[in-house]
Amino acid sequence: DIQMTQSPSSLPASLGDRVTITCRASQDIGNYLRWFQQKPGKSPRLMIYGATNLAAGVPSRFSGSRSGSDYSLTINSLESEDMAIYYCLQHNEYPLTFGSGTKLEIK
Amino acid sequence: QVQLKETGPGLVQPTQTLSITCTVSGFSLTSYYMQWVRQTPGKGLEWMGFIRSGGSTEYNSEFKSRLSISRDTSKNQVFLKMNSLKTEDTGVYYCARDRYGGPFAYWGQGTLVTVSS
Figure 1 (cartoon, each protein chain N blue to C red):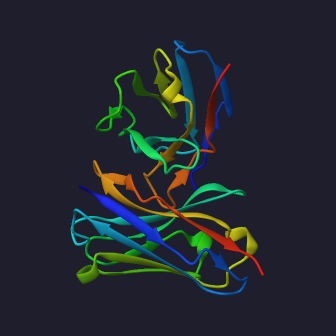
Figure 2 (figure 1 turned 60 degrees about the vertical axis):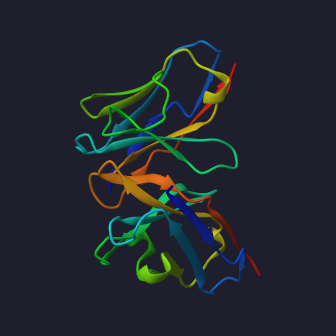
């Protein structure tokens, strides 16, 4: 199975900060990488697909990038509504696998 | 408007069978893959399997032969059945639809399943 190693597990940050969350894939997954945001008591929400593409309705302060087997989600100018847990997902091969999550919280 | 809603039993006893229904609206099940994923305290988000637009299925081997996914297109419903439940199967179960050529673009609200005697 492909392992998605996500870091950090917790990320304290201040409003207005620029933050980056990373997932490393244990095998080649191409651009079959998605990012999700989950707020307490809610279902996950698709933020990024194809490693770099913004899903409909996602603010432009979110962006995704890739460098080799490392995939990053960056949020520019953090807002209070961005505080949530973020997960990556690879869907290049079965079984589909998620990262373990990054909890973004106010410092 | 795409909508998905899971309906489950809430509480299931160990060794029993779990049955969850996902009722959808705003699209046809014959046009999209439908996924099942769960979120448990022990393992976080886990992909369980899916049913293709044509009706064939794919499962996570982690669930071996315990899991079955089916559908009734006339009722716009997708079904998850999993037998031999254990306490570790306690969690929130979600159905989800694909978009942008991949999974989990639309999610249901989830249904909490507690496995306990």
